[in-house]
Image 1 (cartoon, rainbow, N blue to C red):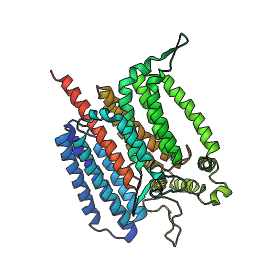
Image 2: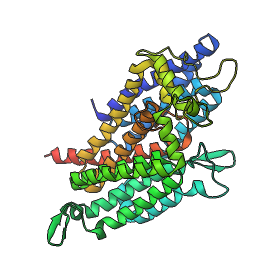
Image 3: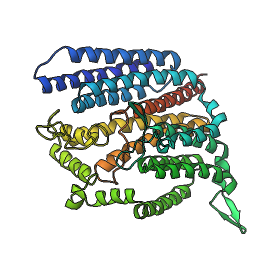
Image 4: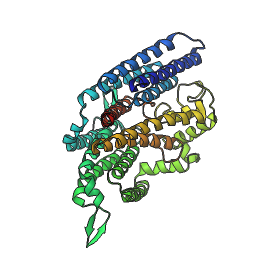
Length: 441
């Protein structure tokens, strides 16, 4: 079966999941089944078919599994938003999904030869950094729980860091492409060969990356900082093959983590909440460990197979106030585990693993260094974003305010991650086309 036909058949389960999920929500809310779920399921399938036709025409050799896997996540997220927040928010989420598909089409047409982005790497880096500092501009800032993640434009909120991550990955891929051999060779200090590269080659990259880290600390957005830092280490390792970079990077991260946890009150509070989520003094405090503790209660109630769809208690009985804070954004994974159990949560993580695997597969097939590093960085930052939020909810690491890609409610995250997927499709199309050309006599 050809790649695009496999992609087409892979979209059918996504539409069926949408139909079944909407039907379950309607039955739970009104105790009756209507044809509404079939209508929306059909519309969703139609949108996916349009996406398949577009990819079939513009990127015939692109990876056939990326788009179906992303569609599964998007439809599952839409169902969860409908179950948690109701019709109004679900309609907005659906609109973001449609806009995301349009953005994929625009990105594919505009960046068809994505390697031209290398010419503008410093402009992209500076623009991304300026973009990320917007949440601290007076009049635009919209702090939530001590973190400056979004800007407010009238009735709309927007998270610039979601798009900044893509721009910085493009810069790092371009810079490493030109300097990876020098970085891998090391340098000579007092006649002794050491693993560290010449500062004139490593300096500009670390300078821009350090500025980005300072901005993220300034924004109190440590989750995004962790994603960027992890992606940098992954790309350095792939570009140079030097394990020493990873070791030194982990040591620097340990020192930085200690400093942040002991000198910044917001980070120190997050660490205390992580260490003692059930301590009454922290639980009762506003913005304390209540969110994390309640997430543990919800997931424990789910057990292996879950309480059943729509059965998780996320609001205080008799009111519309949420018992579990931010159930559709930061804590949506806790709701999923509560209703679908451990198996449901693991199944969701398996979809993310498959997406990242296809991204790394495109990196291994790519022949030019920029494509290889770009696919590696994009896949790594997506994997780390999932790890940061799921690890925070499950108390593997302190909780941070990043979203679960394609599942959590929020337009900025959906749009930025669709751009990420568009770039992965472009890389995979070029890599697979070259591989097929090499196989042709």
